[in-house]
Length: 129
Image (cartoon, rainbow, N blue to C red; front, side, top):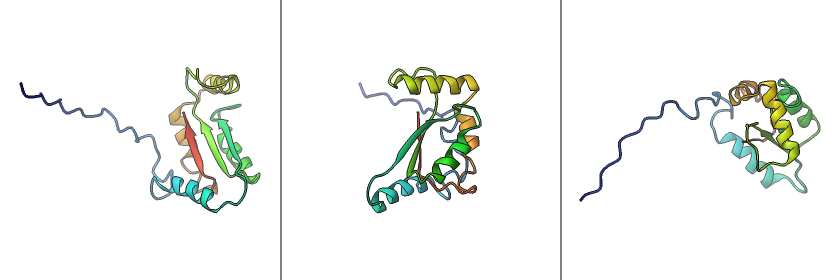
């Protein structure tokens, strides 16, 4: 019996539709280029800072990025809070729960980050979730 072909599945939404146009400047590889450039050009140690989006307050994401850039941090990981972070330690679990309680969502984080490059944030940023 010949194998049956699977039906064509059409996604109900584009999984990248929440990523704002221009989020990584002109193309989606720009942020990776910032990371590559950092590791290729920085001599010595690299300071990588993690923080949870929406913690301690829902509107703290941009002020935290501004402060980290002013403090000469090299790269930033922004944690996307989610409801069941069992693999994370207690501190990240607690900050994530507080961020969720504050109302942080992936969509809100994308809105907050939409114009960061236009507003002068040049740090390489990784979204963790």
